[in-house]
Structure formats: C-alpha cells, structure tokens
Image (cartoon, rainbow, N blue to C red):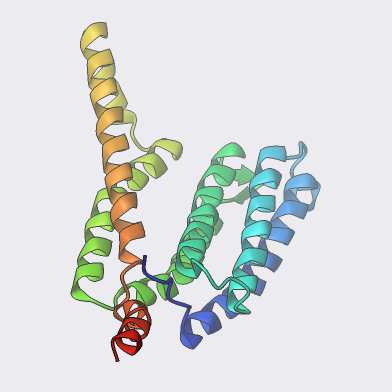
Length: 219
C-alpha cells in the first residue's frame, strides 16, 4: 500500500497562517454567540457556540498539521478539517437565523467558507502529482460540489421554488422524487468521496523504497 505523502513546506506555511486566524476568529465568534449582548442581541446562540467550538478544534488540528505532527494521512486530515470549517460555518449561521442582534452573519459565513477553501488549497497542491490523481480529484469534486451547494442553498432557504414544485405533486410522487433525490445525492457523495480519497494515494515516490530490498536479495 502506498505510503502517505507528507505535506510540502509551502502547504504547511499556508496552514500555519490559517490556523491562528481561524482560532482567533472562532474564539471571538464563540464569545459573541454566548454573549450576544455585545452585538445588541438578547438570547445566547448555543448551537452557533457549539459550531464555533468545532472550528476551534479544527484550528488546533490545522496548527498541528502545520507543525508536521501528523506523519500519516496529513492530506486527508487537512481536507476533513477544511470540510468541518465549511460545514460549521453554514450550520452555525443558519442555527442563529443568520443574524445576531443587528449583525448579519451571512458575510461572515461567506468569509469563513473562503478561509476553508484557503485551508484546502495545500491539499489540492499535494494531490496534483500525477495525471491519474488529478483526474480523480476533479471527478470527486464534480460529484460532491453540487450536493454541497444544494445543501448550502437549502440551509439558507434559497430552494423555495424547488420545494414548492415538490408540494405541487401527488404525495406519492413527492415521496418517490424525494427518495430518488436522496439516493442520487448519497451515491454522488460516496463516489466523489472515494475518488477524492484515492487522489491522495499512489504517489510515484511511495512505491520506490519497496523495490530496493528485492534487488539487494537478488544480488
């Protein structure tokens, strides 16, 4: 089985810059969620605070990646950390109805999604080492991105027209359509996730060390 490729120094540098930014940002967000009076709110947004805590954990994990603490599977770890930041940003904002006091949270959510993308760039840089891995990454992204985009639009309440179309159908047809849509989304995410994971494997240099002992014995 191929040995996982360590993160390159430029990738670790990007993660090293992103980690403290995310840590500070999430800590401030958690304080504001617990004390919304700071922004003119009244009731604490506990779910938002929970998602900010997840981002804090992700920031610590990203910082450890930047320090080279994970020797196995650093690319997968960075990818899931970036995914946790992105999902936490969307669900956290939605859980607070996209507002705290008089402050609109959507711009902050979009900025957090951009930060998640910045965290994921080193992973992308690592994955593109062969034509095969690049193709797997593109296919995986093409399968997963529409599902994630639809989920984000649903959480933001931007799929009202589509849901209204479902309501206009016969109840049995609506159920069948919902099952088919859910199954298609599950297949797309599963296949896309498999392609993305496979893109991190098979680095050309990983297979070379195993050939040397065989050559030495032959001699």
